[in-house]
View 1: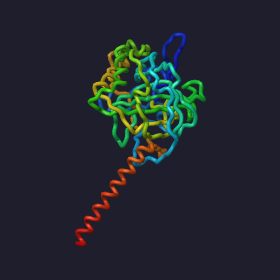
View 2: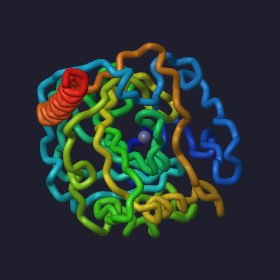
View 3: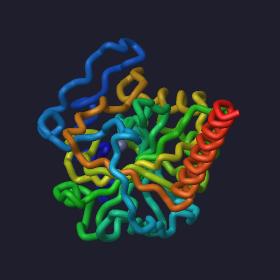
View 4: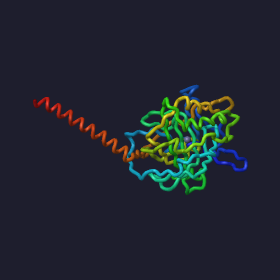
Length: 308
Ligand SMILES: [Zn+2]
């Protein structure tokens, strides 16, 4: 949700997709044919007016000021995380501590339900696509489970963390990759496995200094328009070798999931708000101040030339 909604069947200890088996919807294999069109997934995915992802433009965004986002327990090392290849992504769940998010433009408390990845990124910033986007999916505590939360416009908040190409391997992504071999094969699909390394969610997202926020949807069926998106403007390093590890996930016998991002959706004149921290604003003000000083200096030089 922003991947399919998953719940845990406590009897069978297995994961079941509410939105149907993985073969019922999917992505075009852009490695095989980059012109292959994205399929229609039906329902709200095709007719919704607040769909995600979208392109986020710094210039087109509305300026916003909100209280700081408050993160609780994001720096706790999770030692019992489970990972599953659900045929659409790699998903992590089983957090030992309640990780909660509040503040910002959010009304209420949200708790982390699961984390999953998209390769390449779903959101773009200023028309630039990134190699990886991690979705940290939160449920509004008002609702008892994620499928109920998906029925309400304030039900879900997703932080979409973008990663840029670098020569520096990302240690947190590396920790996830260490367990990937256990779930890569089709035969291992929908079979959760323990994540070998401990991981704190803050390792994936060291800070949120500034961010875009807007009202959107899950990016996979049912495409419920229940999501407050938070996309930090800061991006984090990852190597292409690391991203290529995810591209080896199988969704069918011998078929690899080379890409799992949804195409960009219409903005439909929605409010996309850019929230900057006081640090970012003072840096921008300093830059403007320097530019003004430079312009003054240039003017005085020109004036001197004409006067003398
Ligand atoms: Zn997602």
